[in-house]
Image (cartoon, rainbow, N blue to C red; front, top):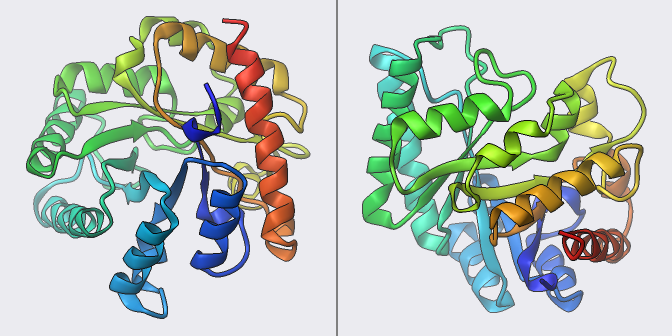
Length: 276
C-alpha cells in the first residue's frame, strides 16, 4: 500500500479548490474527497470545478453528502429522492463513483428496519445506471442508526451489490463502539474508510466533530485506530482511506503544512497495515 490509496477531504484544508488539489497532488496523494458545494460554489461554476479536478489528475475517492434520507414517508421521501438525483448528476459531471450517505438524524425518520432497508435498496437501484456505489455510514448522533453494526445489518438486509458500509473512525470513537463487529463484515462490503481522531474531550460531540478533529496518529486513540485499520485490512479491504479532519485551526494554516501532517498519518497507517 502507498499514498495512492489515500485521499484528503477538502474541508481539511484552507484555500481555493485549485490550491487544495495542487498540494495534495504534489505530496503524492492519489485522491480527494469532495463535497457538492465544492462544485456549485466554485467561481467557475461546476464546469470550472470539474476542469480543475480533471487537470489535477487526482481521483475523486468519494462524494459528500446525502443525509437524512432513509425512513421518511410521502413528500419528504420524494424530496430526498430528488436531492439524490441531483447529487448523482453532479457526480456524473466529475466522474465520482462513491456517494457518501449518512444515516438519518431527522425527527421524522422511521425506526422500521424493513422500511430503512427498502429505502436503501431503492437508492442503490437508482445509482446502478450511473455505476455509482453507495457508502452508507452512521454519524454518532444518528437517530436510529448510529453505529457500524446497524449499518452493516441494513446493508445486508438491503442486499444490493452497489451498497456497502462506510467505516468512520471518529464516529466509532465518539460512541465508544467495540471493534469486535468489524470481523463480521467482509472486506469487499466495506466501500470507504474515513479516518480522524479528536482533541480534548467529548462534552459536546457535534462541536468536537465540527471543530476539533485530528489526524489519526496525533491523538489519544491511535492504538484503537491502529487496531481498526489492521482489522479492515485483514478483512480484505482494498479501497481508499480518507482523512476527514474538521479542525478550525487548520483553516488558518498553509495547506502545505496540513498536507504534510496528512502524509505522516498515511505513512503511519501504511506501517500499521503492514502488521496485519
